[in-house]
Image 1 (spheres, helix red, strand yellow):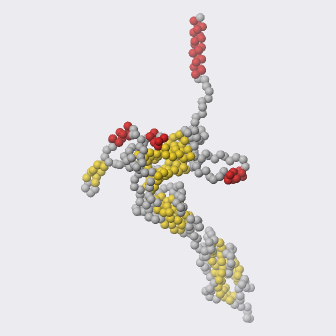
Image 2 (spheres, one colour; image 1 turned 180 degrees about the vertical axis):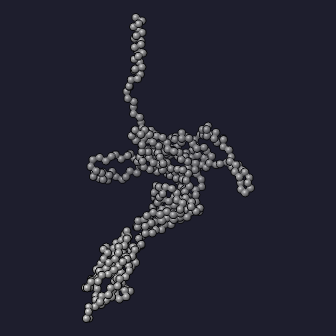
Image 3 (cartoon, one colour; image 1 turned 90 degrees about the vertical axis):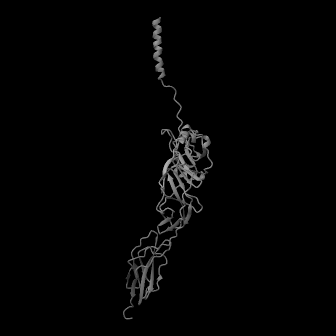
Length: 409
């Protein structure tokens, strides 16, 4: 009897580990969250702060489909000499200042591709929300006086207590005096992507926007142009000081990004032009610290609508061939001009001091026949080039043709 009981107990012990390793029901799928917003940057102009970021285009789990409904912006303004907040102190409900809705990614087109334009028209105006992978922009007006600092942690309190003055020499006496570094009132920002199930992803890098004096504005910018190039020039109090140039409209609607990413120190910037199209620009002195920039008051806008008043080059190589009749054929070399419309033939008699245009419309060929000559008359010919705007070139070389009278007369 005891033998049977012992065998049964051993059998049960052997079954229990096997059951522990067996497969149970499938676990619920993970709830994906978006990656952190990238290229997070801040721009302060006066008391206006503008944030830019790229909307996450992938989930934190690369094998999971992207799900993102919005980007939340958290911000706190800390007073002078305060320690920077921790991420936990910043990403709190009371510090939430904005929520940027994200446009869902467009589905792949299905069916007849020719039907897509009609569907787009029926869909109404474009959706202004940024889509995954696109740039999102948000701005606010802030003041240094409105602080919402959280209670400091023990580590922050310890760092404040451990601060020591820096000893600096004072010229010209050479005396060494203590100087305590001062941290200006600063506003801190982070951005967090949130899934359509309200699950937050990781936070972006934290940006610190200090409040302090802005740099001096540049002098009034000036726009000039040549036949192919529009050039903006400006001056700064400190020669070579970096500035940012932004294209705008006469009404002040600025583009979301400057004309070039890096600050310009040359005092001039050029771009190709299109005649008849108005271009407007503003210029601001800029100081950058990593992803943060502080800019001066705006200089501008300055606007210009280029007008084509630039003639093409003068034709060259004009020659004439006179037949036995009354016809004179003129030939010349081609003119190189992007907007060339053609050529006009001019003719004068005698000394050729007064020349008249013979062609009503521009001639596109490189030759033209004058069939209105008379015998016994001395003719002087020249050719001009004209462009699409009607600008005439200078005269070509002149060509003289003598129409001798018939023998015996």
